[in-house]
Image (cartoon, rainbow, N blue to C red; front, top):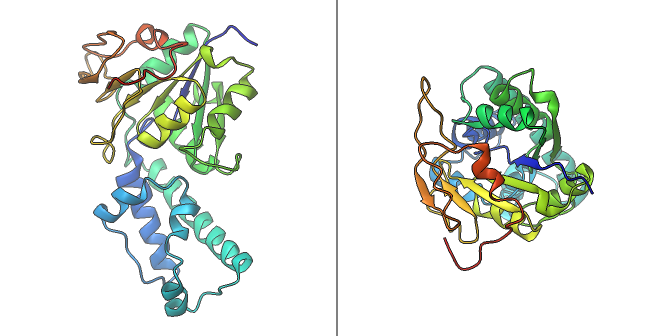
Length: 268
């Protein structure tokens, strides 16, 4: 196993707050293009983000009533092919939204990634989103020069999506790491549970749909990684069970303090 530490980011809600201003409009535009009688509201989508994976969210529509009303086939293989077609188009729309610059990176992501790269850390993204979607956000979030340094594990590369630990177990294995050598940055309870189940230390940066979730077990919960001047964004500490005190913004040294910690039991 490698002794080189690794910094592993989730994508949506961590690299950028993409769900409300990226994925939701992309889903709804896709539904309109395919003539499907559904438009997800912000409130509805706030619940759907708990379902890991875009195709899986689309499949929540496939009730018997919906199939009958739209004339869609009820054969599982045919339905899977139809959903895959919707999802490919949704990914095209989404990557266009990201490329337009409509969804800015979250504070501190590029700063921390650059610091980790300079310190010789391995860098990765582990996400349930489609790989093409993840790479589009990664390019915007860390820049074209740094993005190639990241290993990307995304989409359907594992059988079970978050909160199952599969994606993080795969990431650690492919990077040749021991779990004690990796720190994950997540934004959701499902993502945190996946990281903890894989035995990894986890910091949480809450996002638009996740601020009220239960993050008991995380080693650090903050509003964002934050940034110093001139792009100053102060970090609000929500939970700090290890006493890291990462104010006014999170540094790589703070995340290094999470190495080998895994779940912080019974504290939030």
